[in-house]
Image: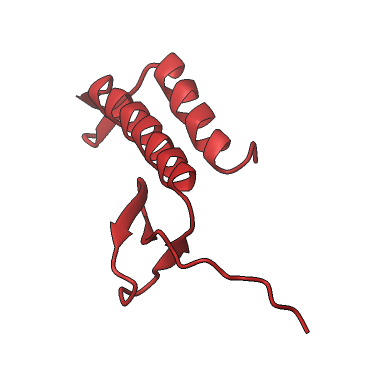
Length: 93
């Protein structure tokens, strides 16, 4: 029989489109956090994603193409930078 102590969670978080959000234990999709380093890592990840997305959105231009539809023109450098940030979150996938 094991008598390992399971620590109480430090807090709870849930996945959002641009990272992780603090939430209550009772919120749908809540996951427990067990140390401050995990919170710091998730906060850094969220901030990097938000910065890359903001730069990507701010760098685009809208134009109307030949058939009257609105198109988005984005710098390939900004596109690749945003993709690298996303890949780092996915583990290089």
